[in-house]
Image 1 (cartoon, one colour):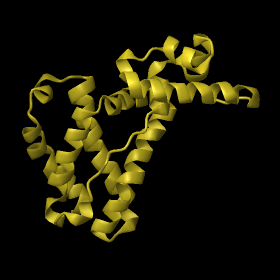
Image 2 (cartoon, rainbow, N blue to C red; image 1 turned 45 degrees about the vertical axis):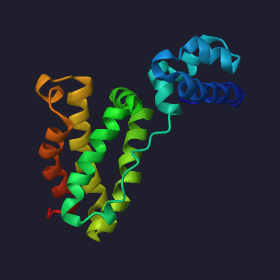
Image 3 (tube, rainbow, N blue to C red; image 1 turned 60 degrees about the horizontal axis):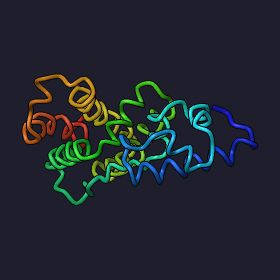
Length: 185
């Protein structure tokens, strides 16, 4: 979405107000009206510039997978360490779940999701494998597993996947992540 120079101050005020409101109230309690009031704009301006609350949230939230240092983990345990970490992050951070839902229909949110995996995971994979040429592909394949799991567990709520414990999920997904992280193509 292109913005004129005149709209930039209002847009920045909305983003700033949204960051603050989401941080203090959380996603569910934050309202477009409250964000607009904090930014000293009409609620229609929020919708005009950002579409809806989910899109605004996806643009303002600072998403970080907070990946463990996989280079410090024995190479043959990297898949287990990553699976354990990812399931914990997704279960404990509603914002990541919202970002995934939004990313399925919003290009900006999809860009954020791609940047998370490319920017946070690919460099570690390059270090683990010593092969920077396959790091992006490996990170993408890790993302297929992680995002597929999250989509099925939290968005589609497939009963067998929802009913699994964290430990069961880790046991099932860790071998696939291990292969993508350090296995032979």
